[in-house]
Length: 299
Image (cartoon, rainbow, N blue to C red):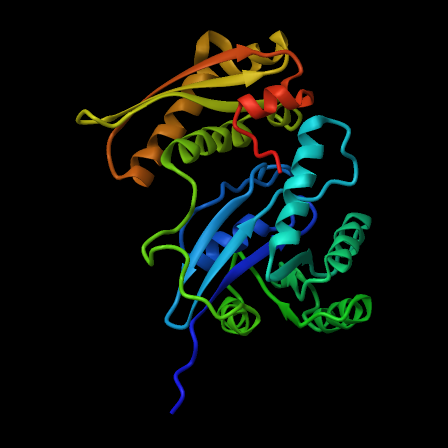
């Protein structure tokens, strides 16, 4: 009896902003590798999430949402990051929202066609579609848009059809031994996740506009002692934003720091001492040099 060959490859997860890509990847690998908020542009970096199985190692690539309007250097860089992931992928998972097709979805589909890569269409949030029979119509419409290798209705949040999705992926990957150790979950280090967790708490607790004008840079990460000592700078673009982040008598910053510290305690499995400072760097989001210095990918 012929033994089934092991497979390993890259699977790019793409879609418009805020359609559930990071939630999906976290659910597929069973671990939080990407931060999640209800606000667009939460994912800014290419993040690799590793799923190791008996017959395949699937390397999911979480990408920033593709933006139709790229009026700042950060948006252009995120678009390039997502496009590079498409070019390098063995398979593409195109995530859209069931029953809510937008112009930005069409833009993403156009890039998928240009890539020439095989793609699955994943209609997310099917649990919210009423009546449920409308999902069949959404699948038919998606089938008319492109010749997808698979069309799968899913709910990333509820876990609907994710086992079926995982089972369908390996045959589209090349025969290859695993590229990463079985216990590895992501290619990003602890400092990256410390910065991301802090940014997640900022995004969740500040009003709608400000999160896009701030980023987090780890200045100190020391785990030599009994507790992990982390110092981080929150960069904003204007003096007025600094006051919003700090809050009255520092209350907002303390609240954000406490929420981040509690999650980092759990994530890192040790007690964390966290210090935060807020500093101004004028228009950092529109400077490629500043973006590189702050750790943004530059494909």
